[in-house]
Structures are given as C-alpha cells and as structure tokens.
Picture (cartoon, rainbow, N blue to C red):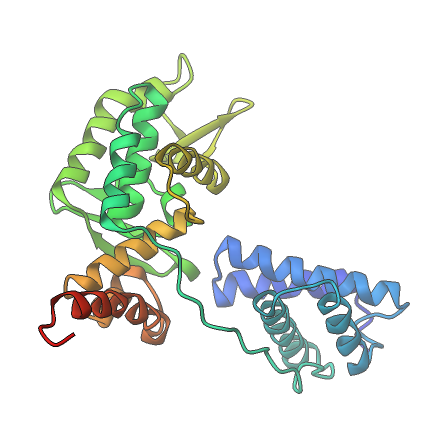
Length: 306
C-alpha cells in the first residue's frame, strides 16, 4: 500500500492528464467530475482506492445507471474509470479494477443541423441588432459557422491568431493540437470591422488594452476572461427563438451544419477531418448519413421512372 489519500491519487491523475496527455480543460473537468463521483461512492461504502474491490466498481456503475443515466454518459464514466485505474496500476502498482469494464454501445444518432436557408435566416436576424453587443454577437455567430471551430476554441481565440494577410485563423483545439482554418473574405471583413469599430466600445472605461489579446473578452469584477460557452449558447438561443426554427440547436450545431453543407457541395471526408480537427476519419463518417439523406428526395422528384 502507498498510504495516499483518495484525493491525492486524483490529484496525481489530473497532473498526468495535463502534463503528459495534454487534455483540454473541458476534458479534464469531465474526468475530475467522473472520478470524484466514484470516490464519493467509495466513501459512502466506507471504502477507499487502496482497499476497494472490483465489486465496488460494479456497484457504482449500477448505482448511477439506476438514476436513468444515458448510455452515452455511462460510457464516458466507464472510460474515465478505465483510464484512472490504468494510471494507478502503472504508477502506484495498484490492482487494475478497470480491466473487465465494458464501455456500453452508444447508439449513433444524426447530429442536429440547419439548412442553408435556416443559416441565412440566422445571419439576417443577427445583423438586425445594431448595438455594440449586437455586432459582437453577429461576429460570433458568423465565425462559428464559417470556420466550423468548436465553441471552446472560439471563446479562447486571440486576436493574434487571425491572419488577415493570408485569410487563415490559427486554432488550438483538443489536447492543445493546432490547426489552421481558411476563413471567407466577407467573414474576415466582418472581424476587421468588429476590431476597428466595436472592440474598443466593449472595453471598460479607462482600459487601454486587454490582457491576453482575447478576441471576445468578458469582464467580471475588474478581471478579463474569455466569454463563456454558456453566454454563446444564450446568444444563439435568443436568435433561434426569434427565427421560429423548431430544432434543438446549440453552438455545436453550427459546426455540424457547416460539415453537412460542405459534404453536399463535394468536400471529401479527409478534408472535413482536417478542418474539424478530428483525430480519426471515422468520427466524421456520421456526416455521410446526413449528406445522402437529401438524395432520396431529389431522386423521387426528378427521376423519370420514379
């Protein structure tokens, strides 16, 4: 036995995730939440990492599954536990209680996305708000769709990552992996207008500069932070409500929408993989289902024998 507390083991695991695995802050938060939930369960059973049994892992998973947890959420927790136990075995010579854990099968579902007409409608509505924040919100919505970047990538974007001379934006994605995204000229012009005319009006009075060069800064109690993902969600939700679109749309849906539209216009999966920053091409294959769904309608309408 190593004589460490359960929280100490979790701290070591978090350090490993950050320094060696280089996971994103969102991924780290997910691991922390899952493992902390498991440690709380162990404590309720008067057990701990060093004297637990594999049966307690089974008991924990049964406990959370009984609370109507979806297979997707359950799969994430199993994956977190497997990673945690593997780390403990390699680094502290503890028994690997995750060897027999099976990740539940996740039913593949088509992502929510907008049609081109619906995207245009969003753009038109976003452009109606001529306030300072309205121009900022318009820039956020346009950029999310035009680039296909994740909302977590957008909120942390720095002005220095935008290269107006080449028409590209340099993005730092999951696991600090970098990629370069092409941006349409009209979107670059919108960003330039935002920086030249709007940006200074978003800053607190007497503020000459913004720490860390954030493209979309948010000020709270005298401190500057990146605008939160929740605020971006609320911005989009407000415009969706105005549009009358009855779909479950989130900022991530704009990313799905771009992927769908690019495929319909002839982009290949490999190009899409690079643009979206996915490690595996299998991750983007779900879009092929979306891409071909319109062909049946066209076939039935246009085919002379249909």
